[in-house]
Image 1: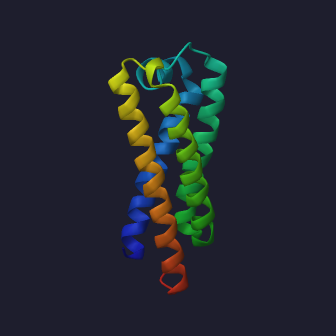
Image 2 (image 1 turned 45 degrees about the horizontal axis):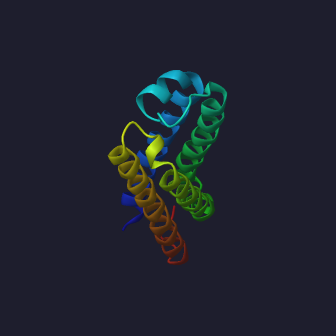
Length: 132
């Protein structure tokens, strides 16, 4: 992966996370109904999670211009997605359907693997001096 392609991927990941986080923070009921319908709705906690997701998305976006942020931010994201997937694995029956619960779990786990991969790529590019 080149520096430029990494920047494009970071822009996409950062925008997706910032957008989802903003939605959960600003419109927690909509987020719960449309995306995160697990268990009983608690708008306050959905907003709290939205604040974290928004901050993560913004940190990923900032890392495009601040390459020294990339490895720690991406590994933090990988750890978070890993724990998030584990939490979903225990709560698959709380989703709209069991199939949706497992699909979400797999999707989130794959996101964690992707973030860990991107952290490794970022570290390699930095050590090769290929960051701007």
